[in-house]
Image (cartoon, rainbow, N blue to C red; front, side, top):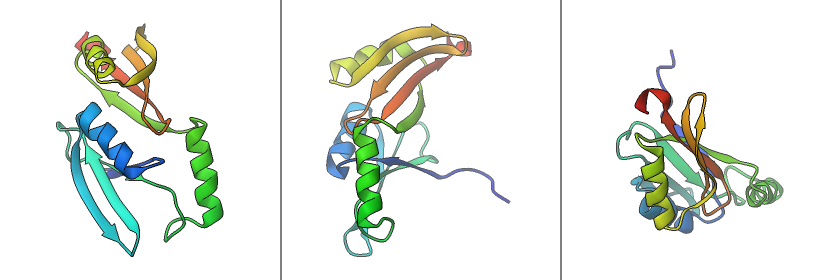
Length: 139
């Protein structure tokens, strides 16, 4: 029986740059950072308040997971902004938004009242969008 999800993947263009962004701008912690099978790097980060959910920062390149062609296709889609990194929750969307903007995080939607709470839409340094949400019960 499946009891939870432990890892979720975010495809990035450069693992070192993505690590800098998720760690130093969003404030995530580093989970694992190791080489597996030659050149394959297993790199995970997690929000400080939720170490049970590891986000895999995966760089698509030819190797055990991707052919050269499939890696190029995925990299092209990342550059187009076709992928989302997920929904990141916060207790105060406006405050967190302001803190992240001060750190240089790009947003294409400021905090906006929605049916479910307050949401801002940001972009990581690979081009993946993410949602920053304060649930309605935290307003």
